[in-house]
Image (cartoon, rainbow, N blue to C red; front, side, top):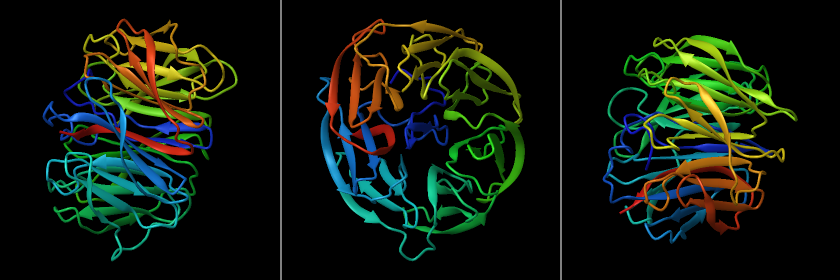
Length: 379
């Protein structure tokens, strides 16, 4: 996959109503170091009581590999190797439901489930990320809520079973956007939370035991529709980019990390995106952005000059303008970036023919998608 391979992996993307809330999740290097013979797969959660795993191969034969039960109000999902067997597993969360993990065998088959039955539930679960929050080498789970109900950390016992971790509250936030990354470069996985209720982005710094301390807060906008994180300026720390949803052109907000988990605000191109995704589009070693909109505007690539300054490049393609959520990855393993887009009742994978020309695509008629995750599932 043509990404900034030192740190970057494409992970969980969430759709709330018609807006996409996503994060380019930096939680772990495990996926990035997986063998290249693992093909990319797409994990999808929906509100339709069913989840999907779609696999790809180098011949662009994208096919539905697994379908398994979900929640009627499922809100988010992500992928990680929870039981440390070298294969990616799939996590689903939903309000007023216990989390559920489907474990896979490296061939896209589900072997067994873990539904957290012995543990406390997490009411109003809205968003989830997976990371090693207590630095014991196993992937833990953080679940954010959209109410005053406490957020929940589940700590991994090392084998894909879990115990209750710390509970903590931060206020009555609705429709939170959630990312995990080492924002202050101390080797621990921190948390970024955005809330549309207050229009504020909050950084919480890890204490190394599954608990967090408050860090910087900065005003964003209550119209933020999408957030992504990655090293945008090539200085080795994790920056933040946010798309502002509006009926007119609004600037893309860029928050450059000072290296200690504090951020400076800069402004990117003005554009009305409803979603944004990061990837090395032009294969020059830095992270570019792709902006999609449900506003009817032309789609754009935002090309990075390597220092976090972006130039907006319009393009003609088979991709219609109305996109609710985006992911990018080399789905056909030909060395360039392809696009995974949720468009109303269709998941569409657009294949890059080279030079950012998209004339081929594969459709999957899947409605009510709430999250899309891409990872190396299939050997």
